[in-house]
Image (tube, rainbow, N blue to C red; front, side, top):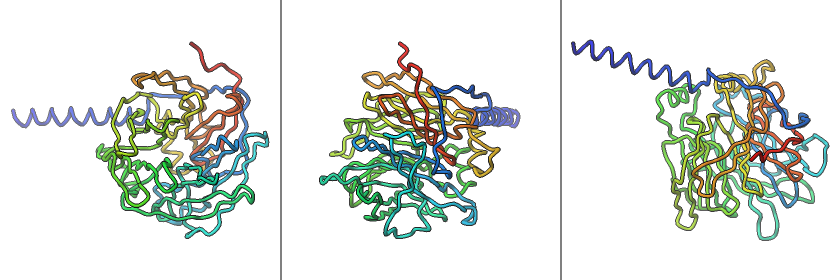
Length: 367
């Protein structure tokens, strides 16, 4: 009798696990293509446009390209890591490669998340999450020379708390918030994290001298601060939710406010001047993972979804508008999006393909 009960219990747990895994892979979802207007691929970053950093005052955007993520071996990494600049005042549909001077390790520079801080003298300081071919991690700080249009290496920061960094938010000239999207350093280890649900990611604050854990044993993908710097948004991409947290930099304190269900895997965030959140999402996980595994295969692409999210005053609720949906043939595995030209245009980033520049010719405020 006891063995029978144990068997039924194990069978029930197994069925629950399989069902949960299938739902996590989004086997029940598909994407129906629609665009907000005319869209064109942007020349230049052919190896991806995983993150953007918008400099509103100068109407430019930096683009990270060539991210390395859980490589099987160094020989798998056959591309270069690069940073591009996109001029938001012109319709050239071409991003320009920005030279980076005095890097410690040019061969090990594969950029991921981006952020920036404006120095007292007006210099734009770029903070870059970097992986190497061997998947070692660091944060590289670069100063942008606007006149000569190149980036100068300032310093490279390595820390044991940068377990598997994904995104970054600058909070000062040498301080930042950083997200770890897990702890495993191999595909097999990552698979175990996903299956077991025991993640080793979270949020870290680096104060310029040392790091502080703010959140542990979570998946923290894209992160972004509100325009007033008091609210941190965190993509819990494995749960298809956005965590909203109050942030007190003086006290180094992070407190949860709410968690918003999106029913899609949102990657990185951009907060516009009207406090709308823009995000690139992965609506069908199984297809995105196949694309991640071999992004050079033109027949493997990840479906994409761009959302504009408007939060209620206390962040308890959110209203979402789908700006774009694509099966991956135009926009493959979207990661981020941001509007410009008074909302008449939008730039969309991808994991391993060209960014896409679209006109917005439809109303987004429906109610």
